[in-house]
Image 1: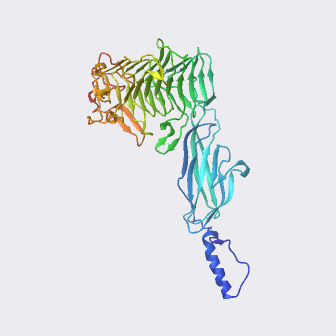
Image 2 (image 1 turned 90 degrees about the horizontal axis):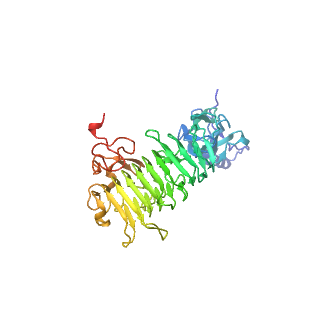
Image 3 (image 1 turned 60 degrees about the horizontal axis):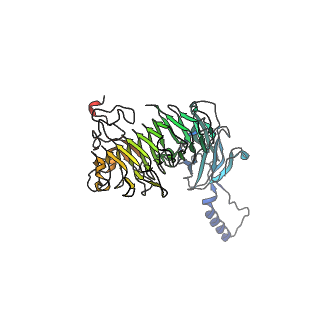
Length: 496
């Protein structure tokens, strides 16, 4: 039979007959009972802030982020955990800290006699570095953190995560033409360097996971060869969440970015999603007679620096979405740029001092560059700012800067109207539609975005059929009245 009597640590060993002493002892017992009275009743149990701790998906052999939960004793009397242990010890890779004490190897992955006073609580921290399993798919890693109470009752919290074996590369160097092996995820630490004369191809469906501050240094060529419905992705390596509603993948600045050095030409990025970097794509100064970069059917989104920064380069941007950057979404320092059927949307949520959607200047750090040539057609340039276009070129410099059949969030007096044809002005002062109303969803509170067109956008049917591209960002065909921007709105009559 279970002994449910309460136990006390304060037990006077001397007998006193004087009433004054007895009264004093009674007062002493009352004073210490709140802290030193322990229950052994099986009905007095612990309460947990969660019954399962899930660490989402992690890469094997890579430490996870930390999860935490609380252990409450909502009883009047103290509860003693005679033992708290990891059910499988060190077999799964979970690491646990209970109230400041690590359940490490020296303790046999357990601790003893942890007291939780009545109405009090302790905090538990959980991390994971799972071993590799040799498989190609994520596998479930599970363990239990078991609390054994002095009453003999056992309570447990389930710990689990999906672990994925990855190819972990530190400062890899590509010296010859190579197609990335996609048989397992590839995680890059440091710098992925493509030497001059070499070409790195990312095939359809490839994903590069970039560790914190990792960069892609291209001295040769980079080909991101995605396809419709089978795109290339370049992103950070955090697969877990910062908050329940916010995955780390939705936070800018998770990795460095792509740097196309001076010697790099002929780079092609198509059907590719590049996001959560610092400066996503930087193009070093180059010979404008040679094509530096062609970006098509791609997304450059949510970056903590620039989306595309080009110094005196020749580049083409088509059917692409460039959105939400702390600095300018597209920054051109001289050079020659052609932009068609592209959406540039500046709704960066983490800092009100965000840059322009598109900026243009004829110098870099005070040094003159070639007179810029910029042709923008069938595109959308919008955002939160009153002027989403920043031009810093002296009036004495004659530029070839033209906008045709575009939706522009700028003041009409801001540009030379002789170089702006068939455009829609979306001025903050005279429009009933804020920039974000052009799109299906722009929710900066929940960081949720869908830059396909809303049914009320003025960009619908407003592109030039003669110069508009035959398909859109998703590779879907455009209709006889094409829309501005990278996404073609599917009309109700066209839906199945």
